[in-house]
Length: 93
Picture (cartoon, rainbow, N blue to C red):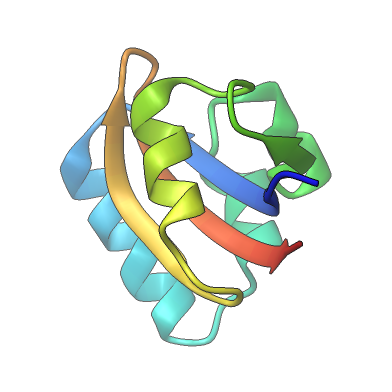
């Protein structure tokens, strides 16, 4: 079985906005609440939840960041063609 990641993310337009939101998350605010408030991705309504995915499912920059992180980590800001992401690694298998 290939490695899979269960992740959530927040998508915003600028690196600064992503860093500001990351600081709120590090300060104790719930990632899902931040996603609902700030993410421009439709997944934001679900707290940014992306569910389980394997390699080949996401754009390369996002995927590389997600698969290189440990469970519980907040990765980013990561830039893709869609904008700037913060990625919460919920679990791996």
